[in-house]
Length: 213
Ligand SMILES: Nc1ncnc2c1ncn2[C@@H]1O[C@H](COP(=O)(O)OP(=O)(O)OP(=O)(O)O)[C@@H](O)[C@H]1O
Image (cartoon, rainbow, N blue to C red; front, side, top):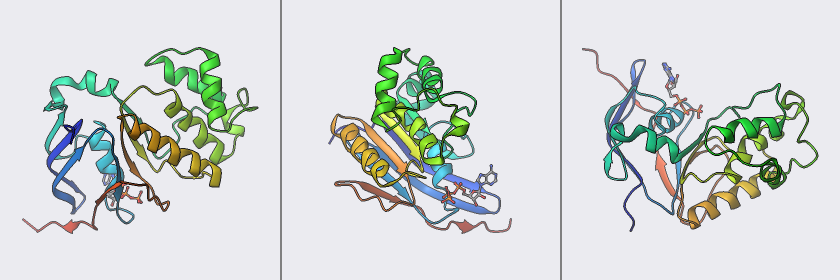
């Protein structure tokens, strides 16, 4: 098996008076899809944000390609595409403008390539409509169009299936499988009934109350 891209060792996170998880080891290997599961409040979003380097409220060690992640934050972020549970798009911009702005940070692409990505998520005919006038599912599709122009190997996706219709779900499932098949890795949470071939499952429980000091 390949070496892990991202590895977490002995992670612990406390929130309020609860330990969300402790002694947690995570290994994200190229070519895999890992689904983080658990009930509401189990800590799925918190874990994804820790893995994505967006939350520092944990103890434990994180490694990127075998080296401490803290030594190579810039490289790590260049290799990561994180999409949070909110679509993260600007409502006053159009889908094309949003995608242009999001991709410009990494790798400016032609409008032709961006429109092709929007077509790929079913947004043909909506390039120039302000996102605030799109449905929830269409707004999610704008965010997911980033996957179609991504060259980042690691995708961390929080509730990516929210608001998608049947075809949107099928299209996203296919994208995840293709990304893993081409050597990428996916970490995802969803309350949608996702069961892809070979998918690993990382189950979080309901956490434990902390003992009084
Ligand atoms: N910034 C914060 N400060 C204090 N507690 C927080 C904070 N963020 C999250 N929590 C708490 O941590 C717990 C886990 O939250 P999290 O959003 O990670 O759960 P989740 O498993 O993603 O839930 P859901 O399935 O509902 O999306 C919750 O009880 C939440 O109230």
